[in-house]
Length: 93
Image (cartoon, rainbow, N blue to C red; front, side):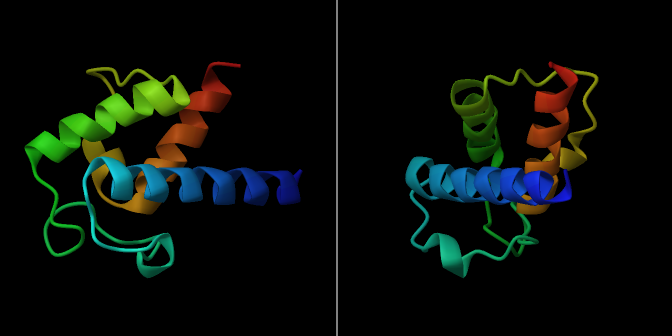
């Protein structure tokens, strides 16, 4: 079970990094983005337009709809986003 979780996390992590790079035109490789990189501020320096794009990404790539009631901290870092995706996927099973 543990290895399955690690594999799932790695897969989601890679997908999120790849999608963010492609959709938001970030001039980096997936390997250059640390898992704890902040999405805003000093990290990837994203803005509110990018935040909207991430919500679209979650919907299109992972079939996850973000609810008003969701804690917005999922947008804090790459790792937070990955945890959010995994938590949502498991909740919908």
